Amino acid sequence: MTLLTLSNVSLAYGHHPLLKHVDFQIEPGERVCLIGRNGTGKSTLFRVINKDAQADDGEIWRQDTLRISHLEQEVPTDASSTVYEIVALGLGKLGQILSDYHNAIHHIEGDEEVSLDKLSDLQHQIEVLDGWNSNQKIDSVLSRLTLPADKRLADCSGGVRRRVMLGQALVSEPDLLLLDEPTNHMDLSAITWLEEFLLTFKGALIFITHDRTFLRHLATRIIELDRGTLTSYPGNYDFYLQKKEELLEIETRANAKFDKKLAEEETWIRKGIKARRTRNEGRVRALQTLRKERSQRIESQGKVNLGVESGDISGKRVADLQHVSFNYNNHCIIRDFSTRIIRGDRIGIIGPNGSGKSTLLKIILGNLQPDNGKVIMGTKLQLAYFDQQRGQLDLEKTVRENIGEGRDFIDIKGHSRHVISYLRDFLFPPERIDSPVKTLSGGERNRLLLAKIFTRPANMMVFDEPTNDLDVDTLELLEDLLVDYDGTLLLVSHDRAFLDNVVTSTLVFEGDGHIGEYVGGYEDSVRQIKNKSALNKKPDTTKIQAESRDAIKKPARKNKLTYKQKIELESLPGKIETQEQEKAQLEQQIAQNEFYQQDKETITSTLKKLEDLKNSLQQAYDRWEHLDGYEV
Image (tube, rainbow, N blue to C red; front, side, top):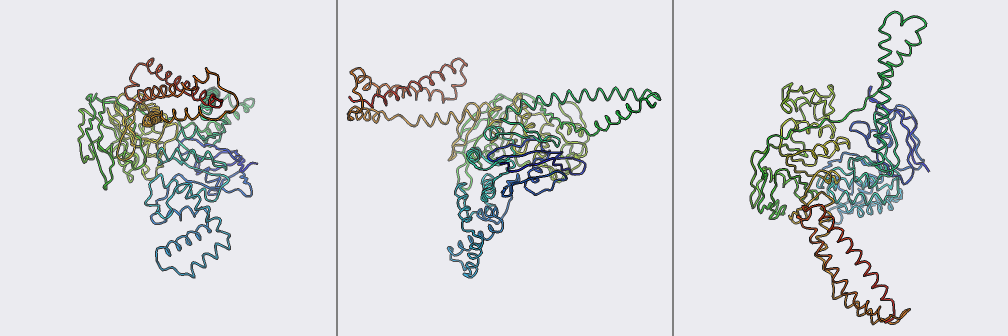
């Protein structure tokens, strides 16, 4: 049964239409991804669905018992409320009563004076509202999300805060869950956990995300909000990309045909008085209609025009880290780490929130001194640094002032360009360039920071979480730019697809200050870490042989072994042991950094040999199990 239906819904702010005659419905169990450029109105559509905003026109039908929960994009920075209190707010008034009761009980356990009358009154209110089951729901959500009930929200990391707000959304057991950029500020392990959790969620889900891997793993349908129009694409993200390209081509051809017709009619009307004769009045009215239709057309926003000048060639050695260690508050962040960064390296830095990724960048750039070891920087370095805190932007100054720094013209790749013209490349219209930066959205601030750092040539680019708040289109354009960039790149990101498509090696924070180096992108590092872990688990050949002897002594079952089968059974443990050792050696060989620096034929041949060996081992184990069922 349909949960929600939007029919002919429209909403505009001033003369800017965000929703134009939108039709949409969602069924139970669907996982729908809402995509669109920054500023198109995706969050506004969520607020309309959740009754936080009123549509100008149209009808919205909701199932009578429909429960909707909304996880907003911005995470609150509440300084005093505990995790329990924030999660309980998802239950409204009852949640506040349960929070008061929870705190009262907590104070009693802490030997603080609490009015027994107050405690009794809270218990009575909970009983009247039949709230004890809801209290169990809060405890269950806290347990499922592994949240510290009595910790203040202000003391939690960004990833934990996202889980807290998700807990608030889930505690009411919603039929429809709205998630606005749920992976922002989450590290890779938290994102993977969230994916697995949402795959088991029983209700319907509509989510907004820029994380293409997250999108591909979850979405059963994609809807796009573009220039006020909502279009539905059944199937996965790749199907959407294909259909979207086809629709844009059709739109381009139709607009070109329309513009040609309009130009012909404009030429005709300019010929003079003949056009205004009675017999031509219909044609004049048709031209007026064409003009009105053209004036109402909303053009596609276009794409960001990204470009960076590589600058002069740096020295071959960019940075040399020798036995670097760094501690913070008696906690080891980096332990005895050595590496060499060579000109042209494209390195991804991966790790949990708070593990030290930004600290490592600051040490490499010389902004932070290590406790032990040394960092030797190369020569002729021209640096472009994208700071995730956007510290290079002055929030009180305007967009123009942040780029031009008091000038109307700036030098870009050796050519003088007007600030307004340059900002248009980053989708800032003239009416926005004198707006204070503090009024911009997160995505607009990221675009502005990109515009600022690209004004100068750079042979080394350092990006610390550049993908947060960027729409998918801009993200893919940035990805293309970095793929073609011939300088040195250091990239901190939690976007798995972005890492896989851009970097050629990774530094992974593995805990206790240890940093592992791996060839390839994110998926390559995951596989190599698994292989390295498998090497530490040697096969227990003694157990295999003992189990084999026990199997031979087992009582009769169905059939008796022939002499040939008996010999085969006795030889299988030795065969399995040999193959296990060979498999371990191959996996150790593949786990080495140098393995992927060989020619493609050698790499392919070795990987195929390992795959064949795994199949042979599985057949040996299956044969052993089969013969073990016979009487000796």
